[in-house]
Image (cartoon, rainbow, N blue to C red):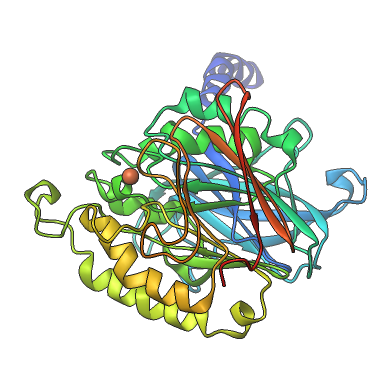
Length: 396
Ligand SMILES: [Fe+2]
């Protein structure tokens, strides 16, 4: 009998090995990247190659080995009491100290099957290897003397150009990076978001540098256009939002499509009129807020630049947002959209503040303190193209 069992085990051994080799496992595809970083929280976003549940573990930046103790866990709370089983993961880590660096590790368990009420079958857990790929986030300070940030726009799926423009992003030590719209030409498939720019963004800097993203007119296009929202986490949960870095206040507008809703090229699926009306109501509240009124430097991002006499999208920005911004007092508006550099002096459109469009093939770096805003523009070979400087408060 013993001999029979021994032979049976020997015969089945190769199949046991094969079963382990063929074991289904989950891996992250894109990410993590950081959004909505505040003085006491941050959100990590990533995608997986199969449906999974997820969490993030955090550790202080104290030099201890990750495995020194059990690390605190934070879960994807979008399920409002049930853990989401999804390929796109958002985990917000909160209760943190301001101006403090934390290490974090993204974790996930793949889901191979769900049997309604009967069971959920998980794969073995998997976490990003923080030894070979350390990931960290520094929470915002309560106040800043100066800020340094990069902005690109209108990449239109040119991942290689994007990588060239952002290749030194880590060395730059940006406080944050802005993608000012049209990073894709259309979102035909959800996976395009990762493929076209988000995977590169995460690899190069997004795992430790906050990313702010405005929606361009091209992000309204494609069968999976609405999936774009799943890849972002903004304060307030909308594509338009604000961020405050001490006395520096930033407004990120959604400038909508460039053509009127009923234009035949909008294919009968665009309805931005009511949406931008609501955005204007939100903007009014922002401009009346204590945070805005007490801010010393005010910069607005909008993919489409204001111009009452130009395309519909330009007119929407000019008519719905600019009059309020004029009254409230803005230092600068930063745009993209036209694929070329253009500086609109105050008064050349209906804006009383300067408006700058960044070229589609250039990186714009901003250095701002409480007296001046300096813009420097670089091509993909990191050769300086031009400089601009504005005084804070000059046009208010
Ligand atoms: Fe555009």
